[in-house]
Length: 429
Image 1: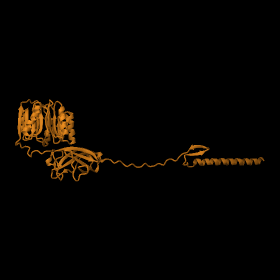
Image 2: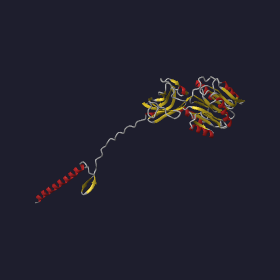
Image 3: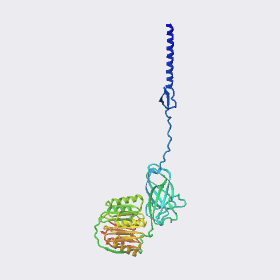
Image 4: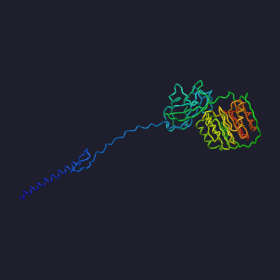
C-alpha cells in the first residue's frame, strides 16, 4: 500500500504541476498579446485601464507660402517730371522749370534703391490736375490714369523713365500745380507735385515799355556779407537763381530751379529741414522770406506754406490755402509787418504798404512779387517796378538790369538779390 500510495502521490503532484504550468502559460499569453481596442478589461471582477495604441504620426498639411510684395524691397527716393516729345526726346529736363504752353508729354523719372530685383511688375499712375480731377483717356485702367510695366533691378541710385502722358501736339496741360502718384497693388508708393508756369515773353531782355517809378534814400551799408549764398549762386552758373531771402545779419536763402537751395548756417533749423524735405519730395518752392527777429515762411506749389508767421498772416495764409488761391509772393519785415500776393488778392498789414500795392497795380498791372522792410517796399509788376523809400543803390541796380525784374529782395542796409523769376540774376550781399 505504501508503494501504491507513493505512485498516487506522484501522479497527484504531477497533475498539480501541469495545472500550474498551464495557468502560468495562460498568463504569459495574455501579457504578451496585443492590447485590445477596448479601454478596460475585467479580471477577478475588478476594472483596470489597459494601454491603447499610440496615435499614428501624420504629416501636417503644407501651408502655402505667403507671397512677398516685390515692392517691399524697393525704396523710391525721388520722382521728377520732365517734358518729352512723342519719341521720348527730352524737351525740358527732369525737375526743371516747365511752361504749360510747351508741354507735350509729362514724363516721370524715378530714382530708387533696390535690395532684391522685382522682375517685371505693373505700376499704375494717377495724375491729378490743379483743380483736383484725375486725368484719364480711353486707354486708362479703371481708377487710374495709366499703367506701365517695370523691372526694378538691384542696386542704389538706379533710375527708370516711364512713358509720358499727354499729346504730341500739346494742349493737354494748363498752368498750375499737378500731382503725380505711383501705385502698386492698390497701395500708393510715392507722389510728387510739379508746376507748369505761364510762359514769359519770348525775349525777357526786351525792356521796351517796362518802367520804373518810386523814391530812394541814403543808407548806411552795414549788413553782414553772405559769402556762402553768393558762392552757391556762382556755382549754379547757367541754372541761375529764381528767388531767395536775405537779412541784415547773416541769414540768407537762395533757390535755383524747382527746389534747389542754399542757405546760411544761421537759418533756423525748422526752415532748413523744410527746404530739404521739399527738395526730396520734388515740390516746387515758390517763394521764401526770413527775418533776424525769428519770422520765416516757405511757399511751395500753388498754396502750400510752412513757417513761423505773425498770427494774422497765419490766418490769411490758411484762408488762401483753403480757397485754393495761388500764392505768388510773401514778405515779412523785422517789425512783424507782412504782405501777401495771390492770383486773386493782395494784402499788407501796414496801411502804407497796402496803399502802395494798390498804386503799383494801378500803374503797372498785375503784381508778381513784393518785398517790404521796416522802411520801404519794392513791388514787381508785369509792366514795371514800383518802389518807395529804398536804398539808392538798390534803385540803381533795379534800373540797370538788362532783364525785367520779377523778384527783388533787399535790406535797408543796401544788400539785394534781383532776378527775372527764372534764371537771370544780380546780387550784392
